[in-house]
Length: 186
Image (cartoon, rainbow, N blue to C red; front, side, top):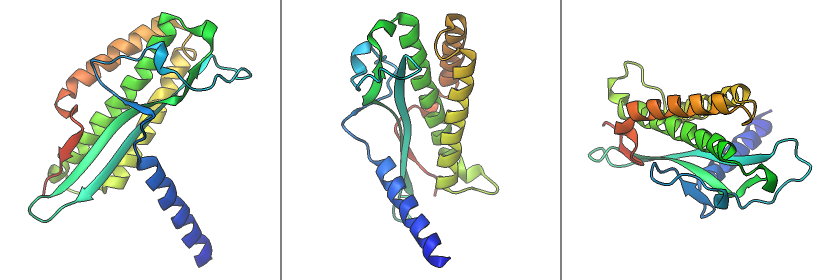
C-alpha cells in the first residue's frame, strides 16, 4: 500500500513539474495581443467532432525566499499554439472570438489567483498555494464548460458576445492583478 502511495506521489510531482514549465510553444495572455488564426498551428484533427481546439493553461509557481523577502509567485495564462488547431473552413470571426473569450477566462482566473495570493495576509485561515492554484484551475475549467454550453461550442454568436462583454468587465474589476509577478505578504 505504501509503495502505491509513493508511486502516486512521484507521478503527481512529475506531472506538476511538467505542467509548470513554460514552453516556447506558448503565447502569454496580453490585452494588447488578441488571438489570430495564425496562432493556431497545431495539426488539424479531421475526424474530430468539433471544428477546432484551443489549448489554454494557467501556469503558476511559488518560490519561498528568505524571511525578509517573502515568497515570489508567478502566475501566467498561456495559449499553446503548437497544439491548438482549427479546421480551415471554420475560420470565422465569431469562432475566433469564442477562443479569445476562453483565453480571457483563463486570464480572469489567473488574476483571481494573484488576488488570493496577495490577500493571504488578511486570511484568518490561510490555505496553501497549491490549494489556491488547484481552485483557480477548477474554476477556469468549470467556467469554460459553462461557456461552451451556453455558446453551443462556439456556434451561438449572441452568447459569445455576451460572455466577451461579461468577462471583459470582470477583468477590468481585477485590473490591479494583471501583473505576472506578485509578492506574497510575509
